[in-house]
Amino acid sequence: MIKLAHREDCCGCGACAAACPHGAIRMEADGMGFRYPVVDRTLCVDCGLCEKICAFKPVTAPVVTSAEAIRFPELMDRSQSGGLAAALMRKAFREGYVVYGAAIDEDSTVRHRRVTTPEGLEPLRLSKYVQSDMEGIPQQVLQDLKAGRKVLFTGTPCQCAGIGSLCAPYRERLLLADIVCHGVPAPAVWKGYLAYAADQAGAPVREALFRDPSLGWHEHQERLVFADGKTYTGDRYTFLFYRHLMLRPSCGTCPFASLHRSSDITMADCWGVEKVLPGFADDNRGCSLLLANTPAGAAFCSDFPDACQRQAVDVQKVLQRNLVRPTKPNRFAKSFENAYLRKGFAFVLGRYGRESLNYKLEQWIWAVKKRFRK
Image (cartoon, rainbow, N blue to C red; front, side, top):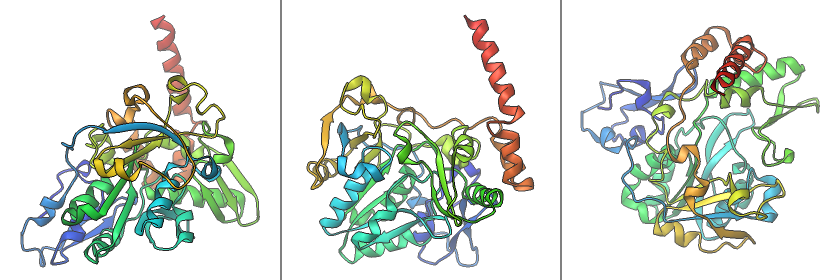
């Protein structure tokens, strides 16, 4: 029987629930919207399969096979960086793969979905800075593989690791593509933010972008479109995300924040490309980092039907923090959670947001320390 001593021990991938042959495990959300396994002891027979399937543990795979800076000019207008994720999914679909990825539903909930039509690929594009709902997805992936289908699954490293562990007997038909993950924010806070924004605007949110690509590659601001046609562009939610106040507890102990990857392919923004490859991506439209972690990943990425610009890079020269270590939780993360659960989004925005006394005090202390270090 799977046992959690601490919330930090579970990434919420749902592989344990999908693997249980007796249906003894269900995934239930806590107040922050993070899902955890709950065991029905009347159904559990202590077979131990759930613990065997759990993939939230250090990766022993070899380090990255190859690294490239890559851009797809025709895909970049609707992409967060260089269009790599869209290109991977388009190529997989053309080659007969069933594609899985995260999309924003009509109610602005981020959920993984199964795609078997070209039109279905579009919602999977663009970043979603919140943990996606994986309900039923591991079971669907397993069913597709058992039926002889090829599957491309895209997601966070922990989601990919869970799918890979669950579907290990069919790994030769499963292609896993993860991201360099900063950590996954709480679904409940995202929902709380949308409700707050709708209340402020006097109209419900019709469309949400976590990071508006029209502002340029280096700008990280969300964009909301309301039912009355008005828009908001800013960083009320993004600011809280980058302060590491609302990440899943397991993100602080993530075993996948390393060059040892359990996925075939890793995708990221190629930050630092202007220093490594001057002139390669100086138009502020974006550039992707492609890491081929396995021979299967390298073979799949050896060519793309979409026109691209690509050049090999030394991964050590574009090494990002989350390819070295997990994101360190903010020391106020627990206080933030308690405050959100008691008083909601407007309260935590006022206490921890950019205009809060809390943040201004932190900035003042930082400035004083910097001054004395000189």
